Amino acid sequence: MTSKERAKLRGQANSLESLFQVGKGGISDALIKQTDDALTARELIKIKVLRETCTTTPRETAEKLAKATDSEVVSVIGGVMILYRYSEKLHEKKPVKK
Image (cartoon, rainbow, N blue to C red; front, side, top):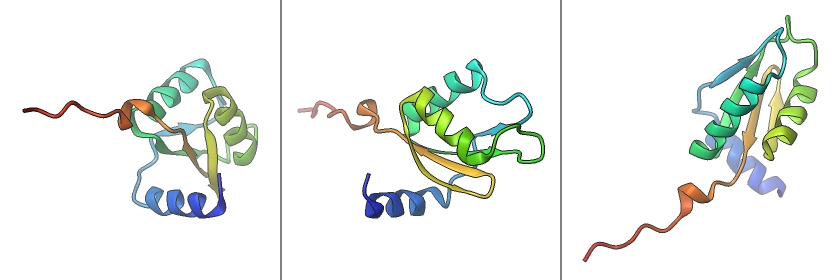
């Protein structure tokens, strides 16, 4: 991903609300499944890391979650991470009605 693509995605993510929070439980199978489903449905998501209770840094958490969901880390600022994964489901061509 180029820096221009990253900047464009960061701009699009500004208006997004955080979908999930990672806390003292860390990255669980349920969180991975929910994140995977959200990436399929939306492509671009924002996740908040509760820095006071999470055992890993937000950057480490983002890297682990991205690897588990086959996505890319767009950015990590403070306790907020932005993940992106291209979704063919959202871009498939719909048949034209005649």
